[in-house]
Image 1 (cartoon, rainbow, N blue to C red):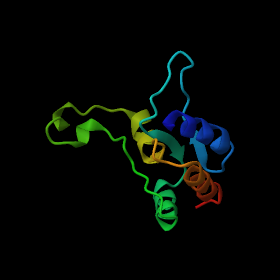
Image 2: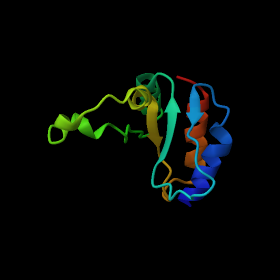
Image 3: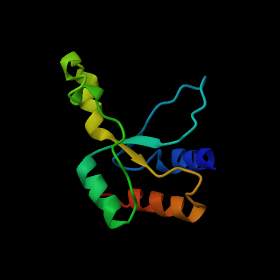
Image 4: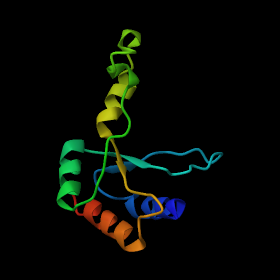
Length: 111
C-alpha cells in the first residue's frame, strides 16, 4: 500500500507548483517508508500542512549537527542548499486513498 501511495504522489504532484519530486534510479525499488520531496519555502509549507492537519517532517539533516560528530564537519554546499527544501509527507500503509487525495489537494492549493 505504501508503494501505491508513493506512485499516486508521483503522478499527482509531478506538476504541483513549488514542488520538485526527487529523482530515483530505475535500477532500484524504494521501500517508501517515507516519501520525501523538495518544496519551496519549507517553513510556509509546513505551516500550511499543519493548517490542513497533515503531519509532515524534515527527516533529513546533516549528521554533523550533533555534538558527537561535529568535529568531522566538512564543507558540503549542495547538501546545505538542499536540506532546507526537503520535507517528508505521509505515505505509509495506514494512509487511505481518501487521505492521500486530501494531502495532494492541500499541497496543490499552495502555501
